[in-house]
Length: 155
Image 1 (cartoon, rainbow, N blue to C red):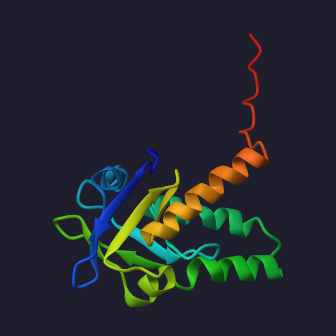
Image 2 (image 1 turned 180 degrees about the vertical axis):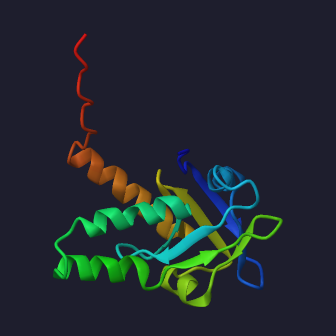
């Protein structure tokens, strides 16, 4: 699946609608020829809204099911992920409505920042987005974060 990449600033209209950036719409449409749906949810880690391709969002269910049944971890994570998630159907122009509770969670005003995060995207208040990106870069630098090395295939 194609990844969500880049940072894009867009404006909310008076009805709370935003245009999903064209690059993000292309990812959402990958498996849906019409304007593909998107799953929106308030992040349980940050003051932002997460946007997921429906199949990627559904795939998380398998990881939750891998947790011990009836454990606090399973219950808490399932509620954090699913209880406030909503399906949003873009209109012909690629706009979605950001419900008031989601916009309030992220502290959104007229301008919003869409940030690509690989498997999903995030919608932030622009200055908070800049701070979060700087924070992530600094933490990655200080902790010298790297990706795991792919296993070598014997020839």
